[in-house]
Image 1 (cartoon, chains in turn red, brown):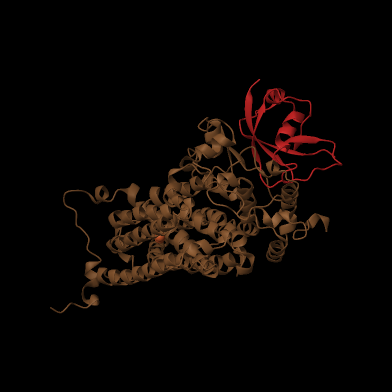
Image 2 (cartoon, each protein chain N blue to C red):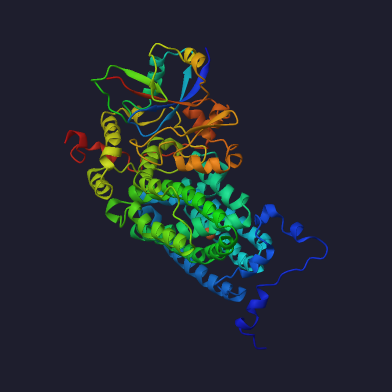
Length: 88
Length: 498
Ligand SMILES: [Fe+2]
Ligand SMILES: [Fe+2]
């Protein structure tokens, strides 16, 4: 359990945000934490989508995987850029 | 006693130099201050200024200018002009005073360094006039703002802004700290005098003066025009400096100018792009920001590069793309984070304004309109909390402006590098290129996100951030027209619904 800063960009919005996540958050939870700054603020809700997905360097991450588990596989420095998009 | 004609003594008087006997030349003119970078001292004998101004001439002309500004100021204060100005135009004047006055003051220091450390005596002589000019500019801004303090607390930021951590001010301060105060004389002349002053602000003051006149702000317009006449003169020290540097080190000249042009442009988008295309009432707009840039800044810059045998910057296509988008990004961004401003931005997306934007920027609706649609829907539904931010935008480690603010949402992508164990982000590959040219120069400077993560901002929320930025309720930004442009359904059919 540790707060961890990332840069979260929601696909289709114009600006990425500083987002505080937890290392125990799953990718689905991280997606929510990023999306809240864009969806319903500048991005309309997409009723056809089946939630969100998180990408690191264009690779879609498993929604159930935690950030801590991801860090076990690959280096994730503070302020790493993640993309979040609608899952369709 | 008859006075000598100026031409009888001018060439000797302006070119008085020392032959050093107690110190070496290098001690009197340290490299860190001159920044000659290997150009030999003799090379500067070719440095030639075109002005041929004596102190007597200078004082006479400046005195006339001051009399002119003073007369209009007195008349306008008596007429209570400010009370009758459009809120959008007022925002432009708050923005200008807060972000410019202390840059004028910094320019005094830059010019005084020219007076002492410039490698040519002719340049040092001319520096005296530049220094006096810049003192006048800072004083004019302060006096203008002081007069209006009783009407508007935001004019306090004329002096206050640079002593706060307001994020936009940090971006401006960081750039001018670097190219005015930290650079040696030669880089300062190429980056500041030639690129920023001659290339950008000289023309900006003409445009801003004309917009101010249109808006009925005769006092502000007149002040800007008066300042511009000085600027047009003292910015000229860039050209003879470029002549010398081109002869000895053309690659360095190209690099300094390319870096300065991009960085100056990014600030120009922030300060002038938003004011021209959104704050100025639509019926008063003569040119779009892009048209103004192409006509007055781009042509001029291309001509200078050509005349001196330099190349267009490698990033020219990217610059032209940024010209289509960057200031729209900065507008929606500054408006959305409006509590972090010390002026009141005009949202400015009424049907008439929207038509104008799409006419001037055919892809505007696709890039920006869809985002504003959601904002407008929220305003109408009374969901004002959704029109405000809950976190910080990610910021560029070069320009200190938001990531995404150089282009539009279709071109946004990661520009992330690791340097000495930490991650840096950039608003474009151009800013990244600047950083990578000299990472040691830029890497230590913390942007607001870095400071937030370092725990300098407490409590770690928006309220803590606003407090840290010095934003008190009397100046904090809100919509200039109280959201009128968005509220009326009849006035504002949503594009998406059409
Ligand atoms: Fe000035
Ligand atoms: Fe100047």
